[in-house]
Image (cartoon, helix red, strand yellow):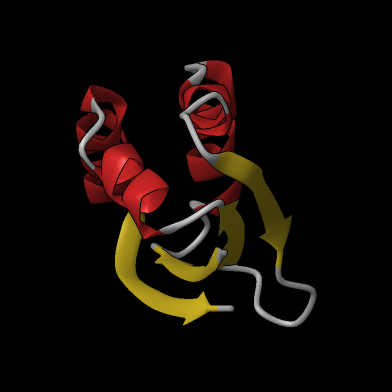
Length: 94
């Protein structure tokens, strides 16, 4: 099992717009429907108003690689360009 912890450092005041864009466009749901996905959830930081966390859980590395290669990941990249300054990613293998 692979867990991915993503921290989005959004542009000032853009966290909610970023999250709304991911949800309303269906991008978040498309990621949840990728083969091998177990969990894909966004969380708002309590202490930092411009941070958004994403917690992902995948069956294995192959599933995560398949997810990364999906066309909707390019759409997420375009969305990030609009709303996000920096992204930190940590992968944990069980």
